[in-house]
Amino acid sequence: MFVNLLYAAEDPTQQGGGLIGFLPIIIMFVILYLLIFRPQQKKQKEIVKMRSELKKNEKIVTNGGIIGTIYSIKGDVVVVKIADNVKIEVTKNAIANKIN
Image (cartoon, rainbow, N blue to C red; front, side, top):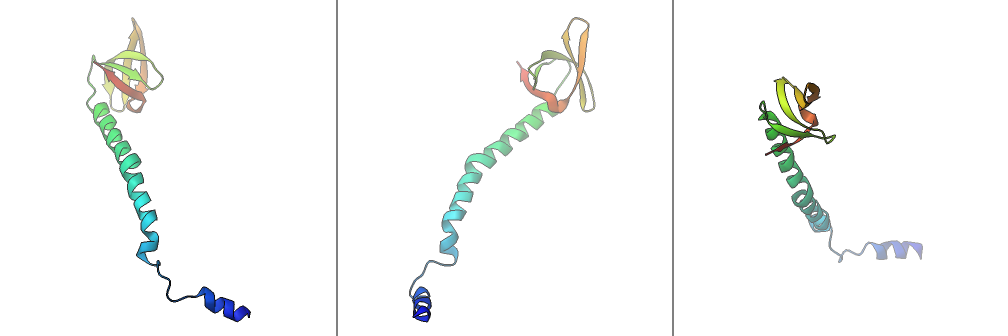
């Protein structure tokens, strides 16, 4: 009796294996890539480009919310003037935005 149940479970007329079985998962990954990963990569490239094009006397906002003007750039470190006679050093990665 148990052997007959095992043979019934292996019905050779059923299909749906192979690539068609993975098709919903493949479609989910494509949608995930198009809606989440691709826009995020594009935004990250824009941020890296903005940080590489920083110049002296541009107004910026840091990730911490500090607004200031670029006083000087020393490699990966940016000296930001936030008030009269007050300058701080931040890394380029800490700069969130330029203010026009």
